[in-house]
Length: 131
Ligand code: C2G
Picture 1 (tube, helix red, strand yellow):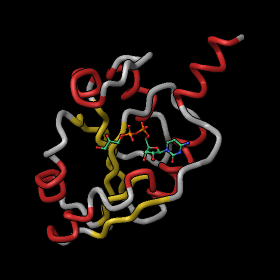
Picture 2 (cartoon, protein in one colour; picture 1 turned 30 degrees about the vertical axis):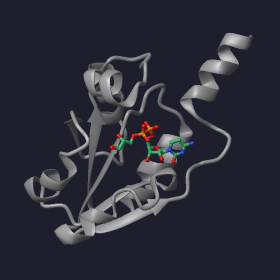
Picture 3 (cartoon, protein in one colour; picture 1 turned 60 degrees about the horizontal axis):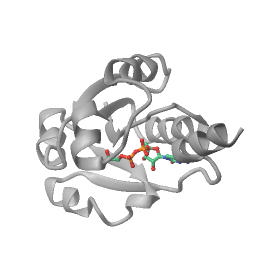
């Protein structure tokens, strides 16, 4: 059982997120999504979410590629998460390329996947506010 983990906010879920999750799941058999909590988004990522953690979690749990959703509460937890959840592969979009290579020292394969161009939560919000 190859276990994959990824991290993110996944607010206003869109096809770019789904493309990432589908490719992440294809790297193994079991996909864990560490979902940024409202507090982590607010204090550390300076992201104002439209949907609450609970609603973003509900949406992710409905996706066929996702097997488990856990909270992402800080930047540091990745190093312990990969052991706690017996993870083989860490995957994230290539906007983070190089930022999590330290996980290789924990015996984890680190994969950066190309982002889906032209779609982002910020873009969605801007387009809607300009309508
Ligand atoms: N993503 C993508 N294509 C897009 C938009 C997002 O592939 N058009 C990917 C991102 O690269 C990320 C995932 O979808 O892997 C979730 O995106 P965000 O919610 O924006 O995640 P982010 O804020 O980058 O959080 O500790 C890591 C952070 O929590 C990552």
